[in-house]
Image 1: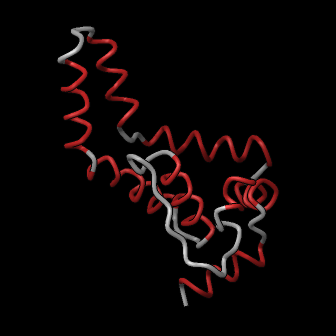
Image 2 (image 1 turned 90 degrees about the horizontal axis):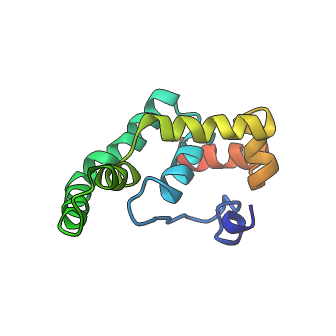
Image 3 (image 1 turned 60 degrees about the vertical axis):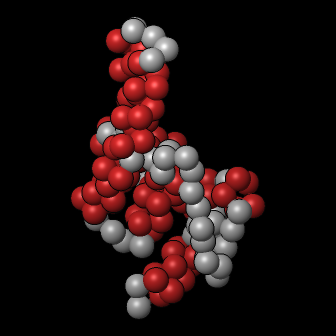
Length: 129
């Protein structure tokens, strides 16, 4: 919570710019939770997340090839690939974790990130109307 709140995610009155190295971990989770708060369908949230893998396919290939030049260990190379790519199960696990911790994603947003229904309403009015 402190990580996101200190960077303004909890303050819906500010524009947000967030990123990470590949866009599937920190930024992918933030984007998925933001889309969820805005009322996007899980199908659309997943499509947005999986698009990261498409956009990063060339970088993933280069990273895997760079590792291949250092080792012939196929199991290690496979691990490098899976660490860099997107997979639906990764985002599903994140949402399942939210539900396990708080009972629902909405409660997770409120309790763990401080994104209350009032803030969600403000987000929706800013970005959807």
